[in-house]
Each structure stands twice: as structure tokens, then as C-alpha cells.
Image 1 (cartoon, rainbow, N blue to C red):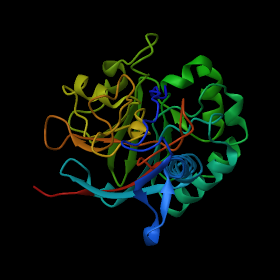
Image 2: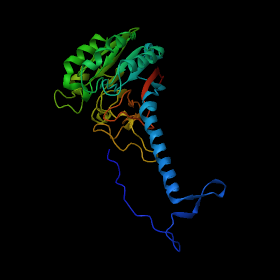
Image 3: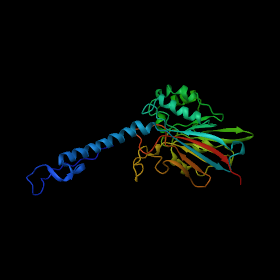
Image 4: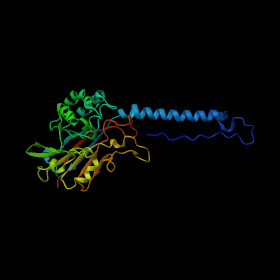
Length: 313
């Protein structure tokens, strides 16, 4: 980000004075007079101090202050056998930029404490290089979920897609690339589908391939890195889409919001949305890591814990 230009101006001499730098309109505590030089110096020190505090917080503070969002969602399409299941969703780890295996240890601990039935990851496991995931593979492999661990690739993962798929599989994740899996329990089933990244031209997302063969009316969870793609799959029976990519904006300014949003997440930015029909939900996770800038401000990293329930009628 470019810093704003500072206009230089000369300090005018006091009206009716001899040019002395003393300014009788500026006083300290107890009526003590301060010079204009002191006044400007103190003001500059205050601004610099505020900048340093804000910078330190956004770099070393907020980036490590994980927000665990807990939410209960209900659908009539969810089979009774799955009612009460716990789904944990995380996204955008961006290993190799501002996150490493020590950070993953914290993330894994919180996921384990949630006691998930199903774990879903919605892309960008690394920022650039596959070797940045290697040290974290045993950590992710230690996570267990009786209904499985599923992942899709994000736009940052495609430089070395095949290597990353191998590492994610070694960590126990089923990587869904325009594909789906049926999860069975108590004579019922739900589907988890995943698509290729929207911003990558080849192979690109193929909803017909990803969700073809899912029985009509079956409860379906879709993993798709870019949330705005929700508008392109409204003809398919999807009850819950899980996405990331936006980082929630990563930097949010009071009364303004996020000044920088990546393509693919300019409409759906953070949190829960209803897309089209009332039973079609989209959740956009703010991500665990950072990219481009090692900062977060008013946009904490997020781990989402859903409890899914069946509603009658």
C-alpha cells in the first residue's frame, strides 16, 4: 500500500510578534506554555506511537488471535441419523508466508478440542511452495473425524497442485477435484462435493461432474474456494457451501469495511449468507493465515464449528 504524500508548508510567524517561536495559544497542563516546536513534536510522537501500536497489534497481535465461531444450522433435508453432527471448517492457512508448523499446532489443538465428526478445508493450504506444508503433514494427520476429512485446492495451490494433493492425502484428507463422496450413517447418506478453483482456467470448476450422480434431494455440502461462485450453482441442490479466499478482507477500516477484496469474493465476504432459496446457505470463513501483507486488522483469523440439525416439516 502506498503511503499518502505529505505536503510541506512553512510555519508562519505569529501575528504582531517578532517571529519568536513561542505560541501563546498552545498550553500544557497547569497553564504551562509550550513552544510550537514542542507542540508539533508531541503531536508527531502521538501519531507515531499510535501507528506503532496499531502495526504491532495487526502484525503480532490479531494474526495470532484465533476467533472460534460456533453456529447451529438446521435443514429439513438433513437425515435424522446426521442430526447433531459437528462439522469443523477452516480455510486459507497460507503456510510459508506468515504461518508455519508452530501455528498449525495451535490450529490443530482447537480443531481437536471441538471433537468434529467431519472436517472440511476450503483451499490455499500454502502461499507458494509445497515444501512449506511438509512439516505440518504429521500434525494434520493426527486429526481424526469419524465422517472424514475433506479438502479442495485454492488458487495459491495450483503452482504445485499434484505435490500438494499428495501431501494433503498423506495428512489424511480426501481432496475433491470436481468430485463428491457419499457419507453413510444409520441407513442414510449425505454428500460432500468439491470443485476446482474458479480463478484457474484449467481444469476449472465443473459442477456437473462434481455433483453428477448425487441422488436428487440428498443433503449436500459443497467445498468451493471462491464464495462468489455460489451464484453459478443455484440450479443444483446444495444446502451448505463452505468457502474462504476473501480472508474477510484481512484489513477492515471502521465505517468503511474491507478496502481490498480479491476476485471471486467481492459479493460474499465473511460469515453466513442465504443464496437464493432460504435453505441454501453459504459460509465464508475468514481464513487462518494471511497473504500479501502479514497483517490483520479488525478481521481476526477464524475457525468455524457448525452443529447441523434436522428440522421437521
